Image (cartoon, rainbow, N blue to C red; front, top):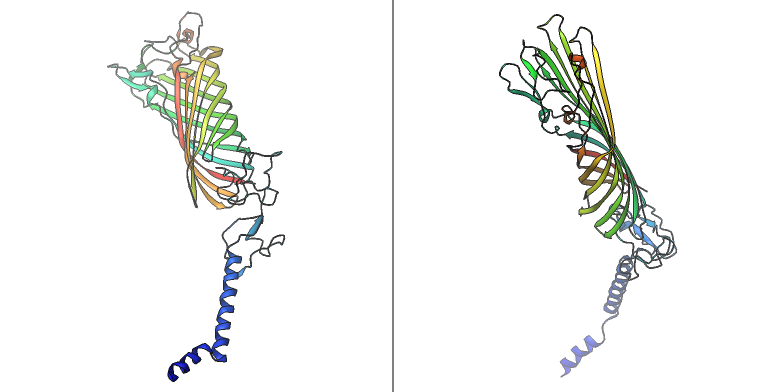
Length: 421
């Protein structure tokens, strides 16, 4: 019993050293807990704008400016509490375009995926590298001996052409609506098909050109097809969800094309040269609708998609010219037909773009661009509907017409930059 009492007394009355050690441990644990609680709370009325090592920076207090300006920026919404996580205020209930206190800013596929400022203006500039497909089928030249086809319009594919595209957007970050203005141009698609010199090797394919058929074989020739495109559009955007936006607006598209064929017969004296040329201009005016969707978003990239379609009024013009020295001196005969509208045209656009952030306000863009146009006036589709035979010695009066049964596909890649402020 004496031993037990001694042991109990030892544990009930710890020494001064032990009590001091326990006091120091409790004080250190309490200080660590308070520090952890302080770091767990984000600075009020601020948003993180870039990655930052906070291990050496003290957290900001309410109403106190943070010493490290690169770590935090004052929220752009102009009211304390806006943009705070976990708030329950309806984000669409705006007052004069501003968020009410405590309102969460809706995520915007354009304004705010890579920067925390939810920018309202977006500017894009892209370089387009595009190919166009060949026109619809139309026989042009046969071999002079067996009459086999040697040149058809549907075989005149063009090399790549380049041009710029500029876009400017203005978005309301409160309700996701916005305006878009875009201009693009691509020029100098060129397709050349030379016919090497061979005696009496070539002849115009039936039904001829401008009514000229069976005018004799020729020895050498050259076919040339060129085209250019430009477009301007003004669209209104409406946010349907965080990742989908509906758009509608006005668009103007101009498609120009030019075809020429030069033939020379050296078997006659003097040598006979015939020149056939048709050019066309399509000025399309109409409305379009579409969808702008965010397909994928990652910390280092996002993928946008775009689809548009519309019906257009086509103010079409075609000009045809025939020249020949078959009668001894060069004789020219031409006709120009302008019809408004020449028909209803269709334009559809499809695009996919990858966007990689360079800085919080600047992105690199790369993607696919495709444009389909139908209901066009194309030169090779006008060769059978004109009568221009006088340069070759004919006497028929000049007649002409115009049709819009052509179509083309323009597609390629885009490379550019996107900036926000």
